[in-house]
Length: 277
Length: 290
Image (tube, rainbow over the protein chains, first blue to last red):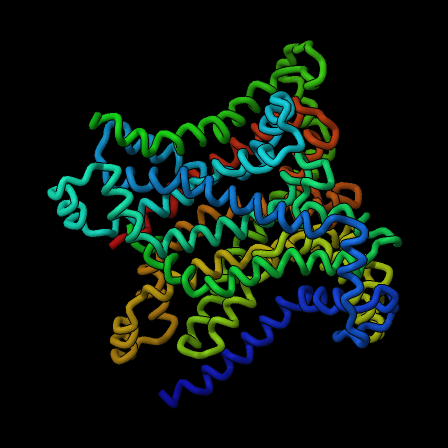
């Protein structure tokens, strides 16, 4: 063991440097969020707020309904995640545990969408949203984002396949129907996978930016990440940097908390799902 | 009943992807041959006019060239560097710092494009951004960074990499944790060197993940870059940091040129399908499933 110690120490040094470089823009954002506006634009650079203040948050809330945006972000990210699970869990289960005609074709139709860049579908979807009169609604923000379930179906199929067939056999002998087997045997045994993908979906949905920019117009319906763009042109001289950084920080904190709580779970759940056919 | 039940399970997902993902692709194909501005009831047939207009456009060619550059640089970087980071984090497994490194390096991935744009456009700000302050302090000339046509593409690539390497790193790391330590130990006792262990034991065992990453990275890079370009440069200056997906976005939703934007979408779909087909043909045979 001891002969690996210097090696490990070098790894720690490299990793710490790597983390600092990676985190730097965000660390700087945190500093700016608590620095008074007049000091942010001063030329001298600071890495720590000299007169820490919460003024940027109150200034942001005075300019825009940021707390309402926070609620909108929660609502949209939550509903998109629920929608994705509702589509992908039963599908993954059936692809893993049922024999039926056309199964492989249906599976590939769904899983091939894993590789569709979302921008490719955006124009016809936008036209449809406008023509249906759904422009600037929560529905327009949420519904078109749900069908990106290719990865979810692929992944849940792997999870359900790894469960021993004998469990389902036993339930069947006890008289459990297809639905009961899914709900009582299938779901409880893939809780880890469900948790991991819920977190991944939530993180992604929380940060939807381009689509939200397109279909959300009314200030009261914006999410945090789309609302940020309302703080003015990023290169403009009039940009209220303090309020902008405070709002940015507000949008990062919830997802950061969710990720930190779940990260161990995510790595553990991803491992068998991808490594085993 | 028996034959219907599975379709109750898979039906919603199949219908949803057909309506919301395949539907728009087909609609794009149709739109690319039509003259229609969405507002007027008149719909005309355009033939291949949109394709010709696109092909003749200087902006399209520049965007296509940039996309090629992006892909050639970003895709290998987006696959190999996260593997390097994952190997390092895996190398200190058991340490209390492991989860901290993992969380810190993944963090940019969970930050929204708009937030990333805010943070980076401040750092890169040509007037009083931090990077320029540092250059000045070191006595070096200041740079215009993403507002310099020579550097815009590089800046956008850098921010895109920063923003998206985390997921691949997590996937590599997840795969590395599945490799049985006993195999590695046995090889080490037999005198195998780390490089040999990696290529002969680790890599074959994680090859399904490697294949997954190889196939999905193209799309994640293309998807991420639109958001980064939109918030950081808007494709400028003078189109120098644009790419085909952003060009499509601008034509369609900035200028409402649905026909031309759809033509670009079709060209992209064909290109993406070709690349995917090539990846499957070349790589999948080497994937080792247990």
